[in-house]
Image (tube, rainbow, N blue to C red; front, side, top):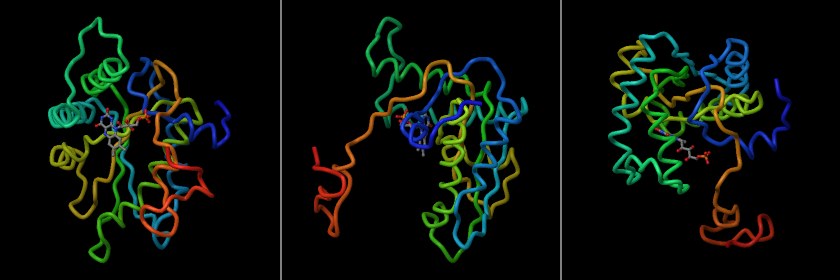
Length: 214
Ligand SMILES: Cc1cc2nc3c(=O)[nH]c(=O)nc-3n(C[C@H](O)[C@H](O)[C@H](O)COP(=O)(O)O)c2cc1C
C-alpha cells in the first residue's frame, strides 16, 4: 500500500477512467469503504448504505445504466467519438470517457445511498453522504487505486434501483467506479481559489485569505 499524505492525495485524486485487468482486491476496497464510514453525517446518524456491484449480473445492469447516461451526456458536453489520429487534449479526454462508458460492464463499482427523511431537503440529506464518498475517493487515491464518480445511478436510476433492490425510501446519491489505473493520478485542472471564494458578501474578493481573483 502506498503511503500518501492527505495533501498529496487531495491534489492528485483526479478521475481515472481506464483500468488494468487486475481485479480490485477485497482488502483494498474494504479500506475505502471503512474510510467512507469515518465521514461526518447529520446527527451522526450514518444513514448510508454502500452497495458493491461486481457480480456479472449487476455489472451488466451498470453497463446498461452507463449506456443510458452516455446518450444524455453526449449532447450535454458536446461530445462525439474523436478521430483515432486526433491527439488533442480534448480528444484524449473524450476517448477516455467513451472507453469508460463502453467498458462499464467490466468494472467493480460502489453505489452510495442515503435514507430519505421528509424533514430535510434532498440537498441537506446529500450532505450526509457526500463526505463519505469523498473519503472513499481519497482512500482509493491513497492506495493507488483509480476511481471515477459517475451519473449512472441518476440517469439509470429506475433500472439500477429495481435490479439492486434499493428500497424507495433510500436516495441513490452517487456511484463510483474503481480499478487499478492504466495511466496516472493528478495533476488537477481547477479554477483558482481566489475566483471562487468571497469574503462576507457575495462577490467580494477574499484576497487576504486566498489571494486575488485571476
Ligand atoms: C456528480 C458527478 C457525476 C459524474 N458523472 C460522470 C460520468 O457519468 N461519466 C464520467 O466519465 N465522469 C463523470 N464524472 C467525473 C467528472 O467528469 C470529473 O470528476 C471531473 O471532470 C473532474 O475530473 P478530474 O478530477 O480528472 O480533474 C462525474 C463527477 C461528478 C462529481
